[in-house]
Image 1 (cartoon, one colour):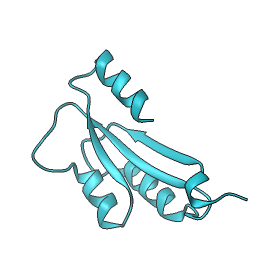
Image 2 (cartoon, one colour; image 1 turned 135 degrees about the vertical axis):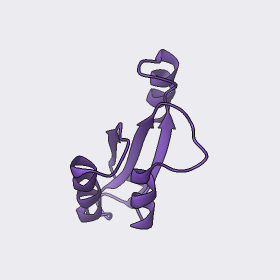
Image 3 (cartoon, helix red, strand yellow; image 1 turned 90 degrees about the vertical axis):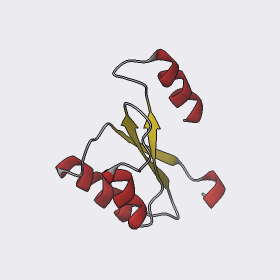
Length: 88
């Protein structure tokens, strides 16, 4: 039997600058996911840290979903890839 602390963790990874079609599908998928069976987190890859949350992360949190912006420091940053791998 799967318990909450042993539930598979699904990470939805996207690099988004707005709230468009693909982003809305991810939010819908996350809302439809059985939270007793799976844990899910949305990670939005952004080039740089900003003072405010991205539109996508803000929309996810308004829906009660776990979401975060992950600053990559640019298009390809090996250090960011390592940081992300450690987080996952």
